[in-house]
Image 1 (cartoon, rainbow, N blue to C red):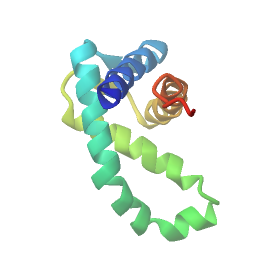
Image 2: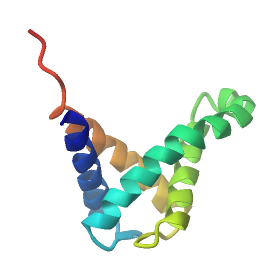
Image 3: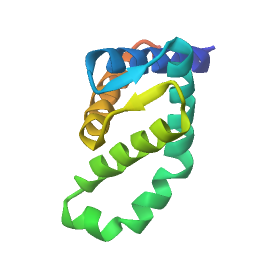
Length: 115
């Protein structure tokens, strides 16, 4: 049940982030859920490969290149999801930053309470 709630909140975070940024658009909540799924899959399978290939530049930039990798992942999701559009690299970077803020705020709702 907790995973379903996190999935729905992740779709809501995508929808809210697209609403806030004029360079990002999502047609409706169904596409926002699809973006959440494809983004999760890209973060699981593609992102580690990109991180391994870019270790030297990531070390030189003290980890800031990971922001570029996040933006590239967002642009990759834009390519594969038809109802989701990002107008460029900078909008993808802003989208990834704001989406991570929303997801961290929403994660407070799904935390298990300690006894």
